[in-house]
Amino acid sequence: MAEWSAYEVVKQGGRHAGLLRIYQGKSVEVIQRALRSYERQAALHRQKMSRPETFVQDWVGKSPRAQPGLLRHWQQDRIRNQELADVMRGLLQERGIQR
Image (cartoon, rainbow, N blue to C red; front, side):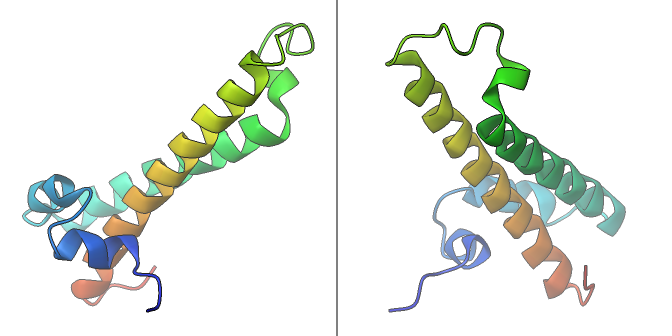
């Protein structure tokens, strides 16, 4: 079976379904603003993962356990924000608005 998009999962009542309920009644402008915000957050976490020393003081001095833990945390945040952006994109597409 093909992998489902975050929006398809939400429509089936899965992860982030509450977000869908909240934003279904919102204006296009509010949804677009949320989409931009989630996309910015996903991009920020990609930057953190690619250049952690820029975001964490003494990155090199962090323990061998702390570095992968922080990278994993940022990866999870990036995935979540990308999923939320996908939900907003799906809402816009459902309304006939392409972005």
